[in-house]
Image 1 (cartoon, rainbow, N blue to C red):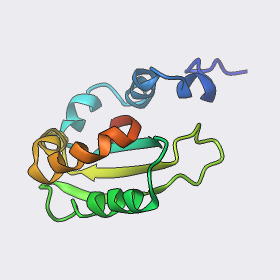
Image 2 (image 1 turned 30 degrees about the vertical axis):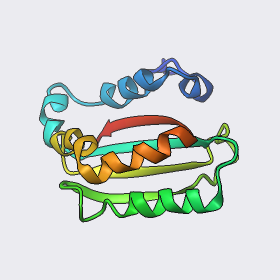
Image 3 (image 1 turned 120 degrees about the horizontal axis):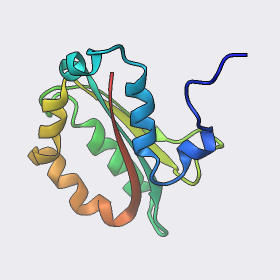
Length: 136
């Protein structure tokens, strides 16, 4: 019987504060020197929302529309996918998305871009969010 390389369960990874475990899991499989080489690789920005009480369907649709509108506006943003969470194991995260950036520099510039800065001004009070950034 092989000795497991990782000592974790899906439940332990899902606990709050486990983002570092997920990042360690992703980078632990890289060959020596690959992490340094991957600094120019794509970066994925993942987000999950729990909607607060009282949010309307129109507000949810506005969030989707504004996030999708970043495509072609935010430099280095390659892909954007957003929408309702379809998983029965979503732990009350009802909405999420994945954005692919061409590199770390593009992701670092994203929160400072005027198009992005307008979104949190109205959206953050309506959500509890989790974010992860993953290098491919």
